[in-house]
Image (cartoon, rainbow, N blue to C red; front, side):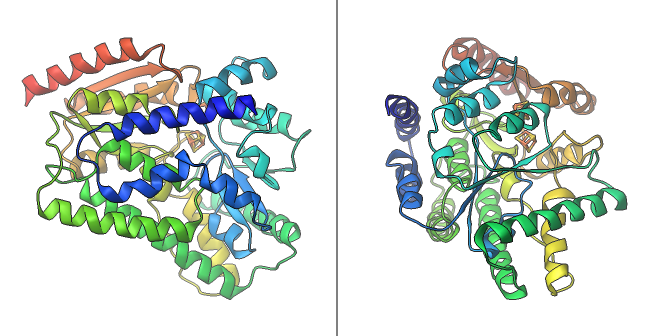
Length: 404
Ligand code: SF4
Ligand code: SF4
């Protein structure tokens, strides 16, 4: 109980800091309250539907919804649980995995709610951590192909997703029908279309929502009931459209594109420091941000196998995660740079995150060739490195202003 309070306390501290930024939209309040009052934890405790957790975004949530279960993404940026996790996990792994290990060891939310964990062989940290969890939880592992391009990868993944369908049906005792999957796809596609609308608004000269609140909205989708999220985001987008028309919102000193290791709730330190320095994150290419809700399920055959294939392809083909040997990350970053009038790119590398540590050099060299300012920031969860990060950010913003 004491541990749960520590994690929750950190969440409330982050929410209080976000609330102190000027000019917030009124409709952000339900998203704040979802985390502040731990509404979803209470809701799921009183709900008898099965809860299926995943670590990344590779489990098509439409399949989970179609068997009548509740999908959630399990991830944590809590430095308190990362410290606890270091006790149960002896290996030298990134703080995102250690934080999950701390929550799992304490059986804290969201682990307390889970009936099934679907792990994916994405990065080594998560892959190996999932194995340790199988003593404690029901864990189902999906094997990702090494590349997400080409027919071989596509067929392999479809086979994995078919195995997942069997497992999900066994969990709830409900068979996926063409109708239930079609309805679920309609919901997840509506979520994508709303998230896209919200992100489009950030292209404005004065974004009507700051980068931290936009990230909060994306990350509430990790756990929120999808219909709840759609209702609240629809209202928020309406308000943002009005704010945009009325030119309400701050004019950032520099427009930043954020990429790299995921920024995870409640550690929004990097985005907070950028806003405090007068800049703003107007776009991101993170699996914990825009990428999570960017790609719709594109159906070309409305049969049950056709819908399953479309769901499988949605999470694989356009994915920009560098766990794949050849990926779409560079193209996606270029698209964002071109569309969001970006002044500079910040690459976030969590300590011991090899995926991004290794990928950053290749990606950085492409943007350096184009003379687009690039800053590499290394961090860990928690406040300890905030001073050093702040110095780096301030120097970068100053340089961008001189270049403007
Ligand atoms: S970066 Fe890739 S491996 Fe890491 S959490 Fe995101 S999707 Fe998973
Ligand atoms: S931060 Fe990097 S190493 Fe850690 S879980 Fe995410 S992708 Fe894996």
